[in-house]
Length: 608
Image: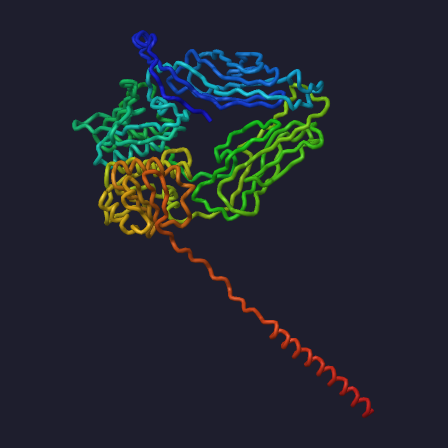
């Protein structure tokens, strides 16, 4: 996991840089995961991302270390060795990285360990000592980020670094005509086109701004006719701002299509653009498949002589009907000794095991099956991979002990059916992404609903969201109401289940006759929805018809759909007494037939 801390203005020489280069400089910190090694050789890759239009200067790697023996730290940056240092005992380490331009960059941190003088010493590299331990903690990259000239094709990085994972949500301020549902729809399409690692809190203009937003999106319709839609990207008071000006609906559509059609966007290499010709729509999001580890968000990884835990989270709307099955694809060296094994555990139950001993040199890519425990059927699994390798006597220090897992070729299969009730709301976006709202404050709720559906079920492309005015005569599949009176009326129906004085700022989600309703009382309730709806999906029970969520995120099921289960056939049990009587009668009949047959033979014999 990578986390990011709040920016602070870097003021040294900033006025000079701004005047000479038109750029801004900030001091930032990027935090990396801790590293713990108990083997003779251990390597861990780290990645950081420099946003489009940025350069990082004066990058400083800082960490604390604790080594129980003699350790050597080797660091490679983008495949170039940049630092080597011996570690002993406890202390701090710090070194400088080269300046970095936009894009992903890789740090490979390698630890080579020898046991302490008091511990057991082995002359065989393949038989590792148990007295090995080195830990690097509080790993950070401190750097100065310099923002250069803005360009539209830097979006969405120009607004906020898409790869940052920050505890506090991104605050995005939306400025548009609150009564114009087309503008609301276009903002929703932009929001679903951009993927940020940090959750985004979308705020409409009326929301009280206690803190400055991280970025602003503004859509404005001008009265005088324009020759074309105008798009501009600027930075005011350190806050990035995307502005769209238009005079007709067709101009607004072409502007948004230009921003969400990646092939077109890459051509906009200036901070402003005027569009006078129609722009092709992008490829819209489709239902995605969950057939490999990569489909579940897992990347390829190396597995040393230890274990690794990964989470396999299938869509919350899935109800598993059988156990998880799959094939693990991996690459491993040959020539391992008897006892070398690779094991797969699912939810603490052994799901598969493969002996790595005496592997043939070909094929390099290998697979083996794994099957989850028979019960219970669930849609999320904790997968533990355990790699126990015993190298042969001829192994060399550079032979390594790593085993590589290929996520794209590792197959998973979870038989399932779709859940029913409130949890089924996200499936609507697979066919009709239309949302009706009655209040501007509901715009952020509509965006949240669309993004949750996209994250759960859809591909990375934008969603063609259409937001319309709520009309009782033309209801949509999804209807959102921000109305205090209506919200209180709904609560009154469940007064025996809810403490009404504590319901302010909460929201109700219900489904009836195939239509979903989301009710809240105010803009504060809308913010409650945007905060909790993405995180409660796994907690919504199947067949829930009406659900209440408080301002603190507490879930209360108010009503459930009745489930019609097929009646089991009635099997009448036969009593023991009846069975004895029947058997007795059958026995008597058989005896009577035997006696009759004998008597008949006797009569025949006498006659002859």
